[in-house]
Image 1 (tube, rainbow, N blue to C red):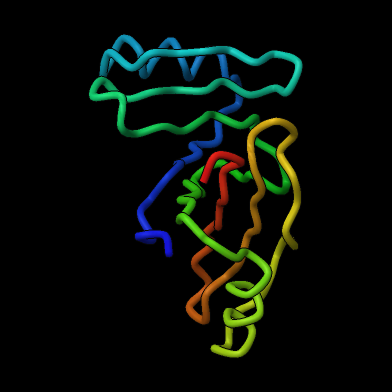
Image 2 (tube, rainbow, N blue to C red):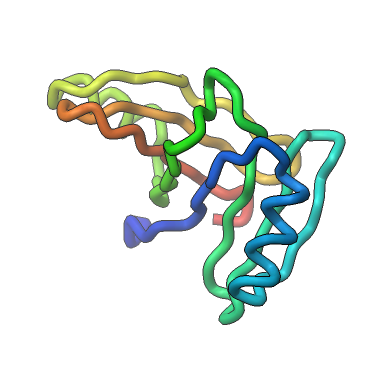
Length: 120
């Protein structure tokens, strides 16, 4: 069973590459632009924390930092979300070559993600 650790954090940005430059200068994060996906990956200085800057969109509005939690079974976790009064916003989907994710809203309205890596 996963430890339910935070495994990825997304910070929406009007320009993912500019956000990468900003946070690299501010925190020293390692940055990897992925312009074909309108996304920039970041890695914190300790190498243990990762995330990305998705382009601001309806799905990724400015101001909504999205935290992803490790999951051993995304479908089962999403079913439990509904049982507990939350809502599924995005069913399990594949990130090619990387893993799978799902997004939900808790009963208060907070939005979180679930993630299973291909190597998990």
